[in-house]
Length: 124
Image 1: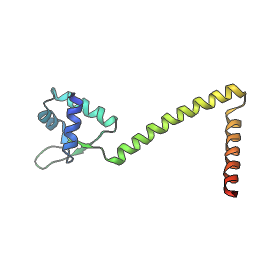
Image 2 (image 1 turned 90 degrees about the vertical axis):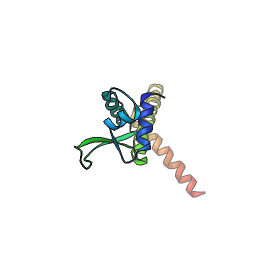
Image 3 (image 1 turned 180 degrees about the horizontal axis):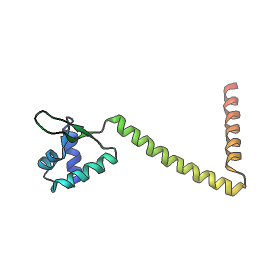
């Protein structure tokens, strides 16, 4: 198991949140700075969220929590949207090159054709 996998598993097992020091101690990942870097990467990937928390008798520290389904879903939807957007841009560029028409003209024609198709289906 990699250090990233160890840290992520540990955070998922402790939904109440763990700070970087606790994660380093429980996981055995050293130095503690490596835990900090791993947590920063996991946060950027949407796998965890980091939040400043004060626990009784302790100073304020960043704690790591498992990402909620909503947080992961939003990240995944954004990634899928960006990927689909790139595919449509490629297809549209190919049509522009093949037809010599502008993007606006092609999109307008496509919308008109779709509208006619929908209207035909509604009549049936």
